[in-house]
Length: 592
Image 1 (tube, rainbow, N blue to C red):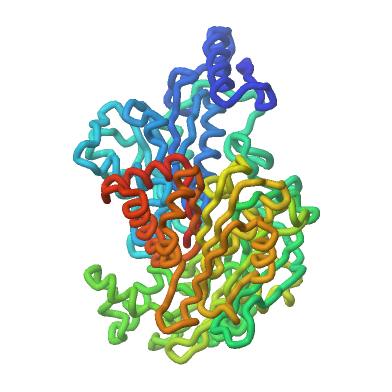
Image 2 (cartoon, rainbow, N blue to C red; image 1 turned 120 degrees about the horizontal axis):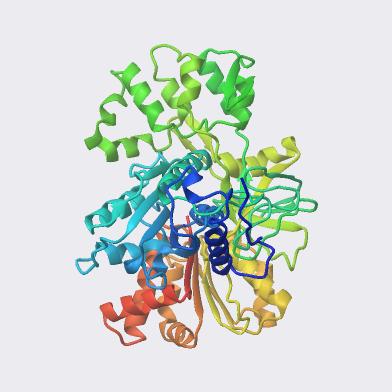
């Protein structure tokens, strides 16, 4: 059988041009005797070069990364893929699309990510168009620890079907460890989408190199699937005496990794569990540390598995259900009923796996216990450095989580790993997670307004370092806040010096506990509403980083109010104005 020739990725064509040419060659050579035809492939045929719309909703970049992997594979199958955020549905001409794949994470309690909110508002509206010509598929990324698992993708899937669109395959749902299930779902998708070409030596899926021009792995193959073992160069406490917080500045060496990052990206950290907690779990099981258990295809000791591979803090929903069943007289048992979801959520706060094990009438067998555990997931932290200012290094700004609940000291897994345990491990495994929707303006003359209280300062330190290193002339306005100026003014020396040098045009501070009435960053915004509005009208980009549940919502509400009061607009007009800021990528958020 003759292989059909194809246009290699190194050729000077963009993705759509390459797919069209591959389709043309496929059509031409499919008439050659012995050439592989579409009917000989293990998928439903389609016309070569047909468009495939791939839309993503992504808060941290995982869904976007999968969308670009899917696009790369679809090219090798003869499609002309178009990859956009869900909010770009108009640019994508979604209402006229024939084939569309949606990959989306869920934010908060079932909400769409920031770059999918406009799409959801559009399709759920009474005025939404009928979509009878659309064939679609939806893949959701989520976390089973949250009550509305993959809630956003469920909403998308149900609503598109209600508008008359036809499902290509049932909706996919992936937990935190999503790579394997996502690949299985995508493999099944091709049976419906089909193939039109055979790539001569090309590989499907993600590779070491690039996906549609976006970096995936480092030069040595380091990335999420193979994190780089990095040296921790510095671990500095930023808070001063009298603070009620523990925020630390970390400097990590990337030399030899081949990993590259940009201001606005995140760093994935693979944590290691606290050995004392692991020993307590093993004791509660009345098990032996060296007892063999299975992790994937590997056999290892129970202690090694619990330290390096399994989450021994947050119980899975399956573990909660199993314990409730075995301990019917416990406080937990009546809370697993569906109507008690909110009560269960409140009861579980501050309780870990060890608390559930101690409720059991008899120790749980290890063979039953291990399959109930979630895999230990990497944590993503906003990078607080510019590679132009610190070549070969990456910096983080992380608050160490420590508290007491139900008679036991609790520790944040990754935050205290960095603070306390990396010294023992001698390295920290890391990878770069690109954040394509949270970047400083490409034009260095564009003004920036940055709102980043507490550890939300991290990416803005990177933005300012970037602008200093490149000599950008754009004005910069930072709103920073925390509890007390004397103890919690993070990076005070750098920020003060940048203000003196003129790099920081304005620095507005809000230390909530320095006076009787608490003052927050949104209050400072309102106090400067007229000037903030003038900056927006002058083309400024507006950025927010920090807590999603309270701070970011309060800042968003303040921004709407400023547009109304200083801009002289109605509430509806303010919504339209801010929606335009978002669609123009002038309102960006990095929230958690």
